[in-house]
Length: 129
Image 1 (cartoon, rainbow, N blue to C red):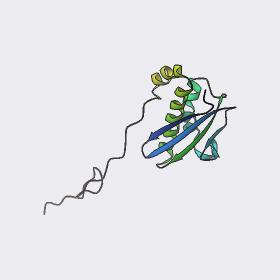
Image 2 (image 1 turned 135 degrees about the horizontal axis):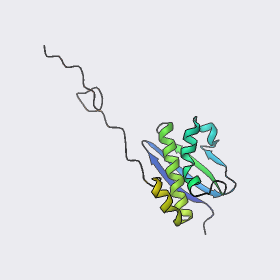
Image 3 (image 1 turned 60 degrees about the vertical axis):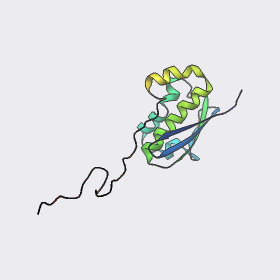
Image 4 (image 1 turned 90 degrees about the vertical axis):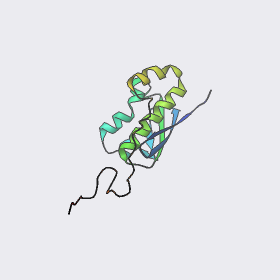
């Protein structure tokens, strides 16, 4: 049986590679403690939700490498990575995680800018004369 479990999570432009290792509940993101990396406590709660639902908060250490995007996208990517890694640990975790919606990748992306326009939707000012 594997000693550590790897998974990838994505959201917006962010990609998180998550590693779950049996341990005491240490959590690091890009080598820093999770409290130092993410500025808001609500984000940290959101990230750790998969561990709370499966009651594995103090059984695994979480090591995540995150790149790209902003803070919110990175937090969502880490959360999905943790959920996917937990399913690799034990397949019975899939059902409770899926019921809460933690196994679904959020497909929303930034819409591209179109030519002849100021942005994705915004137009240049129209002048009749």
